[in-house]
Length: 526
Image 1 (cartoon, one colour):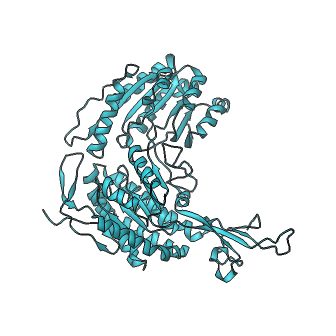
Image 2 (tube, one colour):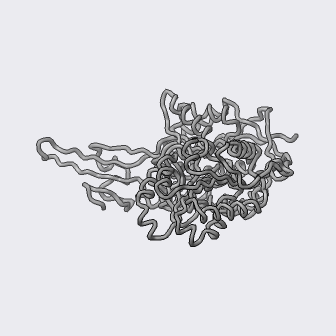
Image 3 (cartoon, one colour):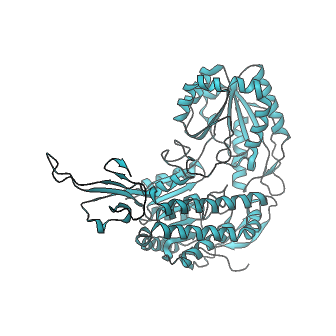
């Protein structure tokens, strides 16, 4: 075996621990020939110490300096796209177009945050001038703005090896806020992580930033991940993964002597509500669209629609049969790794074993050459059964759909009220039905971060206004988003300056507004 690759510790690399691992191609079962050594406890400590040492320098960077850094990473990611096509397809089984598309999304969101910090108004600058002669007491000069929270730990997602990983949205938004980042690589795509990690490391050097700006650690979540979250230098965590994994990190962070926030995206079944006119006018079209949405990426999207509610009756039965037939004709495909495939199989098996559940197609257990293939599954239940068994609302991560028949809008509303927090909730219906469904919309506003009308939820537009978050258990903090420019707010906190002379204030708060940003001055926008 050749010498294994090691973690990135600032400007240097870690040492060979002698307990190396390799990735496995889920399409073929082939063990890839590059090995990776887990970080030692001392190396994890070192990455945190370097990050703490870098914090003050990063916090002092101007928006233009942070923008230059983010653009350097984006350019570097684009430059290695051919290398990523080779590595990522082998590690994940994902097709080349997906790799190229995700590369573009990753570099695009880095540039989006560069635009944000270069413009500068995101800091929410607020100025209240002093009123010395105010009665009964004088008013002091008070000014506030958002400042970086400090070192951030980012856990790579299994299902987005680029866009939610080393230089993905969590890392980009933390860098934009002015925070050092320590990334915990995912075991399923370590080579992809290293390729991007080297790009970030090079950007740190070329921009003259302190080496603790970035580190990349290999190792298990129960060892390296937990040790990282416990380290007193860490001030926040970004995570995308399972509910059990996110909750474990949340509980660990809360139990520290100094608790820290964990922004964990965890689980969502993304319910779809089909109103009567939608079934009557375009049931077949919706069934075809639902097929594409539910099987996209072998169902391994956090916005995958797992539960569909529809009226009972003739039209409902036709929709059930049409959709089950379409899903049964879809081809099996490899999931990202054996752990995800095992969990999918367990979820499908558990659901199919319940007496109140009707299995509409047999997804089988032919796992293919790489032991990771999965076939689409469709189940049906009535709303009464759904409401009586909490297990029916649990996420099955993969190409599985539960169709729930309802006796009219009242029962749909009852189901909606009993749903857990979701990333998305979708309604299909006519304008007239939507106007009459105000109660449904109002309930779903309390349940999901993104509401969709006559569109499928898979696919997240990276833009200023997007919300990719939602109430627990969709995320650990329903006030946040992990996509879009508002994601930066997770890694910043408000700081107030009272009585400071103008020359000692940050540029964002000085009277002459040298940066030309939007501010709130004495209650008025300026």
